[in-house]
Length: 207
Image 1 (cartoon, rainbow, N blue to C red):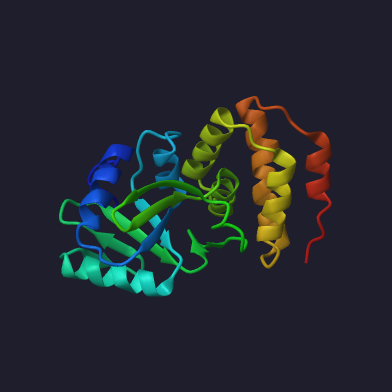
Image 2: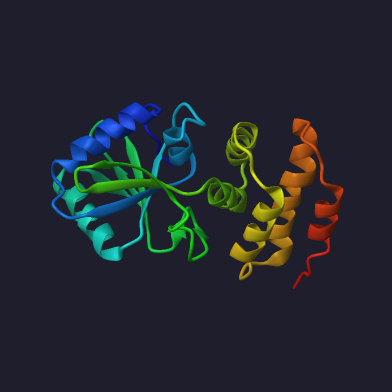
């Protein structure tokens, strides 16, 4: 999979969106996901890919058409590469890095700033953790660690929201991902273990 030629920091991302805004004549809401959101929130220094959800399918098609007119190259189903080698991964509707978030996910998002007719938001930290945990590779766990180290997260609320988000998924799979975090990773990172919560998760019914 191709990635950006270089990492993108928040300032460069804002400059890119400001540049794009000069060509956009319709109101567009963009929701930054994953490492992109963490970079904007200054939890990470930079991001490899620019992950954006455009919930409105009409707005999504408008941006795709604009990217095509601007000479961006589409590779695969979600990725657009700029001439400079920056990778935009565009998601739409309820697709947030492959995870279907809860209906109030967008309402709980944080408004960052406007660039012309572009309104930029980031997902709430709990939903960023959930979307990363659903994929759960080494980079995702490292990002989750950064979130937990720099922000006060209610673990009981996170677990409850994670369970509700994943209710239509295989319980055995998503339960193990959560245990990998709150039991194994927490132990490795020296975080406090919540034995009661761990036991509660282990009792989740599997099917």
